Image (cartoon, rainbow, N blue to C red):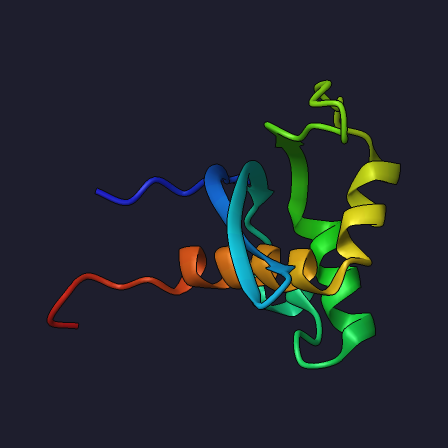
Length: 107
């Protein structure tokens, strides 16, 4: 049975490949996303469209720390700051799109 919900949300780990000298290191945090219908998803191909889409779908983020490893509370300002970081924006968008388009094996 499929449950029809007006405000479907889910939380996933977001794996971010952070550039380092000579390569990358994988860091992660949790993000809660809101599922939006296709008419409200927006243009995920353009930079502006990606930013707008993420502002619509990211509800919250957790497991974020500053340079001194102090926990950083979620805010829309922090979300927007992280969306402007290319590798974070890419990781958030990929995580969301994979989550909403995954199908069962064999389909």
